[in-house]
Amino acid sequence: MQSSTSLKAALIVALGLSGSLAIAQEPAKAGVAKGPEPKTHILTRAEFDKLAAQPERLLILDVRQPDEVTAIGGFPVYLSVQIKDLEKSLAWIPKEREVVVVSNHSARAGKAGDLLTAKGFKVAGRIGVQNYEAEGGAITKIAPKVPKVAETEQAGATAQAAAK
Image (cartoon, rainbow, N blue to C red):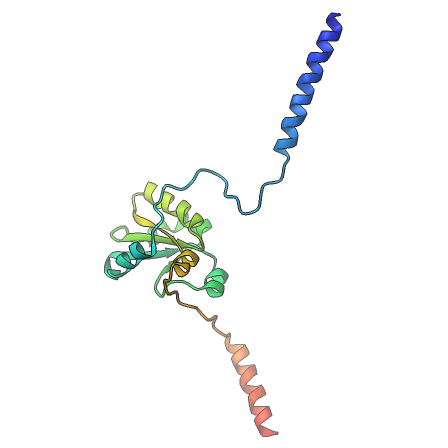
């Protein structure tokens, strides 16, 4: 009888563990941020516009990748430091200015803002450039610069076409 009870207990434990393993092996949902919610304040359009009205006191730090900035747009004047390089680039960020950290929807900006705050920077908040635009704010579309080789080839093709 004892062996039957031990077998049932072992089976219950095994089933419990297999259920835990199945949950642990469930793939992470796309778009779900890992870790705690950043503490850095999310700025509204009105709050950002008020800060941007005093550019001498402000630093806009964009932590997106360059291709995101060109594809989506951004603010006309900013310091670009990708989030993966932020900690090793702190010496380039002036501590005397208030910092607004920018990303597409403010998630990466929140992580960057929390890091900067921990390092003694004055972080006014974070903003998502796409959120800002959705609230009616105007962003700057940034056209990628055409490399000189492509300009020369294009000029040559235009000249050949004109000669015909």
